[in-house]
Image 1 (cartoon, one colour):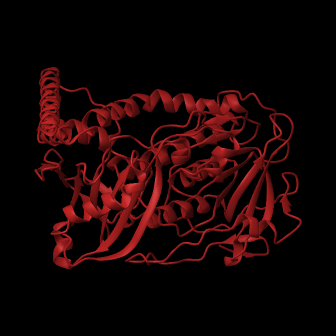
Image 2 (tube, rainbow, N blue to C red; image 1 turned 60 degrees about the vertical axis):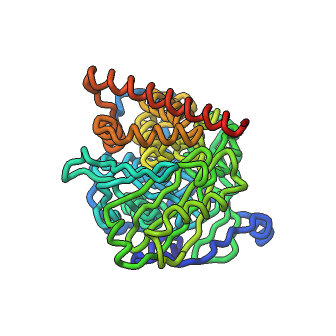
Image 3 (cartoon, rainbow, N blue to C red; image 1 turned 30 degrees about the vertical axis):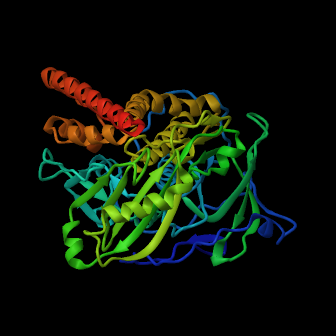
Length: 492
């Protein structure tokens, strides 16, 4: 972003075909705070900053918001509800878009506008339609998957997909940039800044004050500033500073490690519509490894919760498992990032709500987070718009909890089931062998893909469900027997 007379103007840039291998530099809070003794303050009463209008990136349907519910707050005289969204990933960008469309004065604060988050980049088909994503941000349409067991038994998955169904593969730097620009085109004010802390005097005692370092005009050193807002949505990832500020509680997390590898064209042809998932103690003691195709390279990675210090060892094993198909490849980027393993104990506090990774919305077993980040950001923003009557009245914690209640009712069972599956099938190599064996079943594939692609649980055939239950129990029994036999051999 550049600023001209206080107005934000976005510079156009084309998406790179291949990511640049460079090290991101983290801003130093202590250094930036020392650069200016007095922070500039944006006041609620005096602000007239609404950002520059740009041509819409794509037509977007207006948010369906029911304003029939009376909010508990007082009317806002002469201004709109001001909301700060901290973090510009899918959660933050989708929250900002919904808020701006719903009539709220919206600020989206993000430090790294070109951030390349370490991420598999897989999105379900329903997200493309639900969030109106253009095909040009989707690098690959995966229609085939291979599940590869510890013994390297490969099972082809995806046989039940029709010719219009696929899993989208994206680069986060491309998708996130698109979502932010769309939010801006709808009235969101983009701020290139680093959130530092917040001061909340409590409901009815005045606005919340945000302290942040402003990096506008490509400044290397941020300028300390403050901003007064009515509501904050924290979408600043697994290491969320917003979460720390509201004492949201700790959660266990995984470390995801990923290498982007440029492979020869003939090797890339093999992966043009294929993704691979590897399981085994060698690649991860409690998760899986992956090879996901991107625009002109593949992403090879793994993750773990229980043994984070050995993540590079697991990554080396992952490269070894896939070395034949990636032979002649060159590593063009190395990435690592924490991934939450369960929702935080506190996700709403006062007039602050957490969404996406900041709230802990990554599923066990599959490690999916992009869709749930975007969905949670939208749901939180819809609650703010609805309860504020399109930004005309104040909101409080009870209003924000409308989002939380809806979220838990809709997705609690999904997270619980995937948690159980991970504990059952990722606990040992025999269990993983049984898991891959189950994936060969056509009915298992259909139910799995339907639930993933459309985020709905379609009732199955009772007879097939009964057979699946029997087969699952049989697989678990066999894996347990194999595990015990292995222990017996070791003891002997």
